Length: 188
Image 1 (cartoon, rainbow, N blue to C red):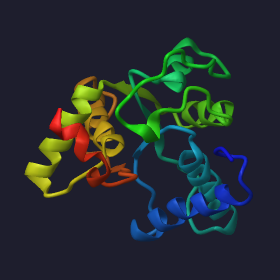
Image 2: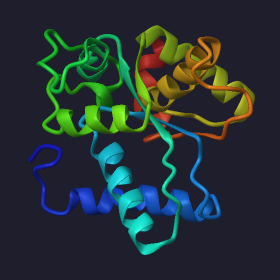
Image 3: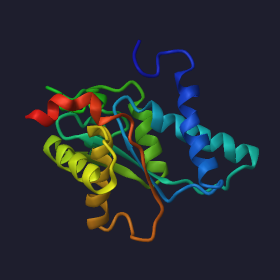
Image 4: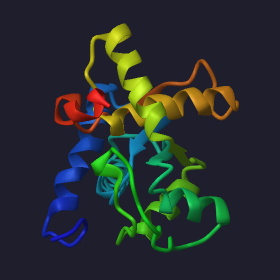
């Protein structure tokens, strides 16, 4: 079954938001960069934030949410930039980041609404930039991030250069896997 069709998956993904809030001492960050294929994590966090606000655990302020995709499969980026409420299927989808290879997400309208409500956005990153960034993060931080996570680091750099994220803002990057799953990509 695909994303958002499995029973209770969204409920499980809410834990991303709950754990983030707890680990940040109940003060949400200014920005969240999330690698987005089907978008369940992004949608789940947003739902968790709503629930925590209703419980009085957090304030009303939300992070600016950014969906990060691969240029070879960027239906959310394309729809966001065009001001669409839904994303059309991305033709000939291709990317080394298999978690981002979702040409038509079922929850596209939910993600686009969240990105707009939060005053966030959507960013696409080239596969080559993901691989370069993964190597850079590994050499500087000692983390073997997956290409999906590396895309978020590359997006942070691009958004900072464009003035969309200020140097003093608190930013959370989600790395959703390990680079060890992509060893063949590093041989190329």
